[in-house]
Length: 375
Image (cartoon, helix red, strand yellow):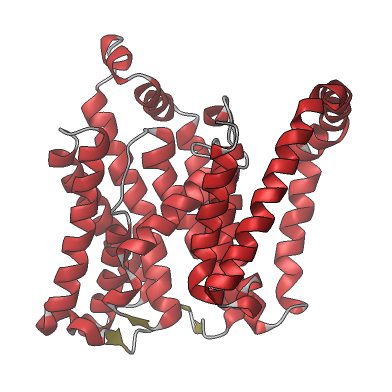
């Protein structure tokens, strides 16, 4: 029985490696991984010799270095200052990745309200992202409404869509709720793909205007970078305030034990509606900014895999942790770009890394028992 787990893991990695390098390379990788795991497993017999000293060293390191650094307000100011001056020292490619990271941070924070705070699994969150993007695109191209005038309408419409979806969906729980939200996401994508007279179908909508403040037009990557930094800060501050409010505590109570929450007087149905609407609100913001930055939207940008990616960001960083979600979103945008040189294997490496992380740290990078109290 002791050989079964290393054998299964080795076979799994070999099968993943097979389509890229063939049978011979897959067999070699199988043997190397199996021998490595068996060696590691044999060394685990002596873990108690090193466990206590290493544990003491880690506790000293955490209490004297990690905790002060994490809690230091000065570190946050320094980080914010670095973000402000970054456009003057990096290439446009790096700025483009940073802009995309900011958009996904807003999306992940919105989904974190539903999944992390209220404990409701939503697999169709990309639908609200699409509604926000297409609302601004249609208002701008059809009616000539500018970004700042259309933004409230986009966010309001996505909030209403989240509220309306929650009304029938919240009669369900667990996997059934996930299936309903998944279906909603696919319905929205198919409507956008087939309603040619309004959305131009698969061809998408082009010629979308960028934001204008007085007579200043946003057309450079630097302009969008600072705009996104502003919106990310606003999103974090508001989400944190709501999380620490009465509504946020009600969401946490529902997530931990819905029956117990209802017995102490919490209207669980209404607070679930709030979570869906509030999460969709931020997706509408991200969608509008995405449409303005790209100046083009199409159904291909809002597939089911986008929902999965946003959910992975929440889980990777730590469900319920605001800072964890920010880190998770940044990593899942940055890592594929860093692995672009090995393009053939980057998604394989990224997927394997996620599996390993979920095995050894399922609570996420900054998650934990007290994730609901983190910022």
